[in-house]
Image 1 (cartoon, rainbow, N blue to C red):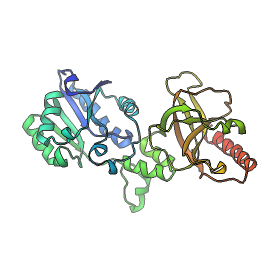
Image 2 (image 1 turned 120 degrees about the vertical axis):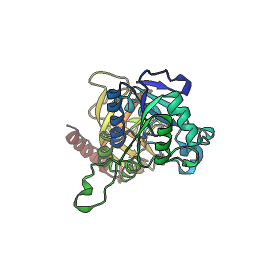
Image 3 (image 1 turned 90 degrees about the vertical axis):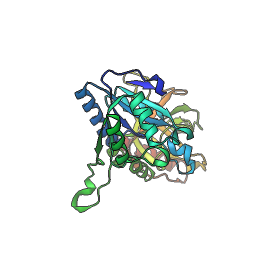
Length: 321
């Protein structure tokens, strides 16, 4: 998949392009349904399949106090987009100048002149252009004038909670954030189509886990991805860039501030099951969350804590087997 960081980097495509536009935070199953439509249509037309996305998130520029915590960093987002079969992604730097573009200027500059769109695939609630003044009707009008087709898709969901008359909850990034805030990482995985992950560099911590017999990989404070609710989780420690059997290791993951030791700094740390000799300092890793075992607890001393850690590890081993 090609990545273009500016409009003038996009090379001409003889068959034009089928295009989707969005933030695509998390690249969840709803996003992938839209992008699957883009790829299938592009193949049928002999066109290029392209997504347009933004960095940073528009709200981080326009209303920082309302900006959501991102489920994925840009590199992770692009890696997930590549898995959908797209031919290219245009990453547009979101600025106040870009936010001032009228819907007409945006469509002509991006879809027509840069990408040579023959079809644009969007959700029915699409908004774009200055003040989000452009909507589906605007895009359809401009598409008719500029010579590209507009395909509007309904929200996608396969939510079992919708059975029996319950309201349907479409797959969305907001839904994933709410699940993570409650520690429901398995529900989040249902929407994402994979375990949620936090990506960061392994740094030195207090080395207390090693002293207790469970050495952990501590993620740097600038790790990317929403950190779920405090607690102990079964998960995976993924060594990015590594290959072989040590690239993906079953792990017990702790999120919290170590209240037994009066900690005050919230951390993500992962113990690779039965791997006490790993030296991961400085490595870029991902911690994937599969299931929450329990909330964070304060224990009356080291003995009860170690006993509970042993039980946690056994439960992780059973869940991840």
